[in-house]
Length: 118
Image (cartoon, rainbow, N blue to C red; front, side, top):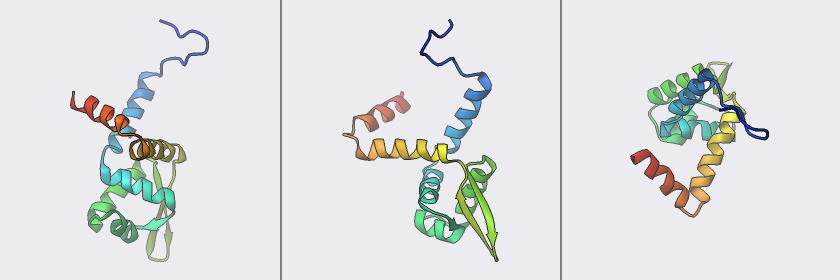
């Protein structure tokens, strides 16, 4: 069925697959926290590990996955690797979801949790 005027056309299978992969990557609380932290400013892996409460090797692995997906980038500063957000649109999605669940009346969080449980 074609979309009527004013409606969005259905995305292609490739776009849906890419979106599912991005959401899958962000399904980890640790990776969500890293994206959240990097949205506040650049940091090296040790600063991020301390902030998110993760072990240095695990934090480094999460950052590598986010970097491969193009969500974060890095640059070298001397001997340190500095990480930064490389996709502001994904940050907006993360911030919207966290804000909705954190500041909402709880019904949004319950709705999300019920849909995951079924």
